Length: 210
Image (cartoon, rainbow, N blue to C red):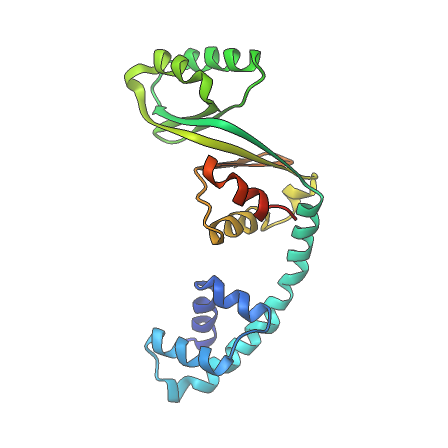
């Protein structure tokens, strides 16, 4: 058994522990005993090896702070936009594609939100709630699910966003840790888009104010 890999895997599977290690807030002896207990290894026989592995991992992840600082630098210079009264409609994939084209034209005439996400078995439409009646007429029994009372949150960043690993992971983790459920998400070269409940708008604005 590779004790180093065991310890690192355990820490990576527990983000809260990893965060405390990074900030120097962990008791390594307690962590060592916890890892041994949860992993089913002999704590007396492997205590020193696990303890050393945890301390080495601390030195390793301290280097990640450099990347985190870069991510925060990008996010601090980003702009946040929020649009409410958004709906998400999931339809079967075998719909008449021209209906999506027609809907796109109708939405864009009014300069409203319109996104299409094509999955393996379904197509997800994200748009303003005022187009729900049109969607129902066009797709009828092909509609699988409709989610109302949503908001679209757009984080507009610099082009460095695409070249910096971990930005999306940082944002999704931050929202999740603050109790925000992401209904849909997508990104472009400079924009990161989240669809959340309208009830979470204030929370999102507070969390993403860098």
